Image (cartoon, rainbow over all chains, first blue to last red; front, side, top):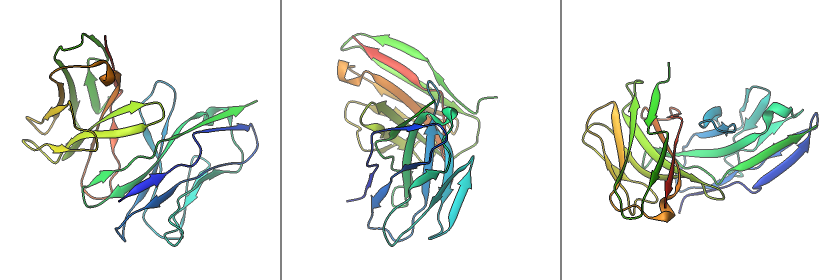
Length: 113
Length: 112
């Protein structure tokens, strides 16, 4: 069946250092789009990045991700983490059969001084 | 002005009672969704709708009903609330295709 895996539940990094949040997926559908959502404390989830183009880097708010259909991955990266990046991050592939997003279990990122 | 609103924002209910969570969107989106959020499980889809009069089951529909009386409104109904339904519930709207979903502020439900 279709699934999305975010391999780390909790990630802690020091301010100024790089961070990478992993996301892999398994789907029977060949053409899909991917989203990264971010949820700050006591707020609603909101879109951070989206991509539907294989091997194309997408950037927003200092974060970047590249959809690699060959390896079924859409990892989120940032070269220099900021304290304000502390939040819950969700990877979410679009499932065209049901016209819904399938959210991973989420990764809580904590950036420490 | 917020495009997706939810009411109530906080609710305490008793076991066996009926609970209705309401969602309104002014985005004129076709699709609306109800999720619950629990630590360790992320966002899980309960019910969704493609338009007025339609409701579809998501991944965890048991114990929940949904109603979409109009383009703007989508309700989640717990006929017999149980403590296991204590959670934060989010409503979202979106258009068909690869468009993103826009979330409401959430409702914190506690079932005692």
